[in-house]
Structure formats: structure tokens, C-alpha cells
Image 1 (cartoon, rainbow, N blue to C red):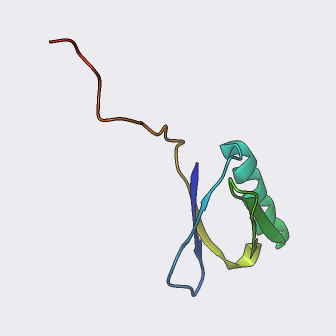
Image 2 (cartoon, rainbow, N blue to C red):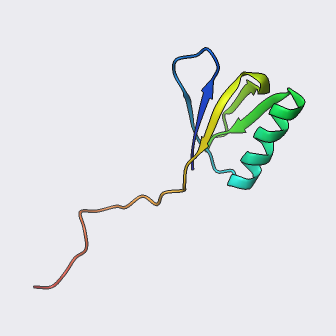
Length: 77
């Protein structure tokens, strides 16, 4: 699932492809903002991204998308 993070006073957003559950991400973001601690998110490759909770502008959690392989359905004509 794709997570987009906007950081205050930074023009570019951080994009992470994570395998974490949406509820788990929401809980981590809420805790980091409330307690002014580091938000730690781990991407699909195991790379950790740490962002200070007070620096978060927004967090957008995208729906998980299934990747399609091929050119389309095969039909007998």
C-alpha cells in the first residue's frame, strides 16, 4: 500500500510502499503526533523511514492495489 507523507516546510512529499496494515499506520501516526515522538514506517523492502511527529503536515494512506499481468482477458473468437 502506498503512503504519502507531507512534511512541514518541505516541498516534496515522502512516498513509501508499505506492507503494514492501515489501522497500524494510523495508530503509529497518531501516537507520533500526540507524543511528539518519531514516526517509524517500514517499506516493503525492509527500509525504515523515521520522521519527527511534530514535522508531519499530512499522511495519505492509499488503498492496496493489485498488479495485473498481461494484456487483457483471453477469449476464444
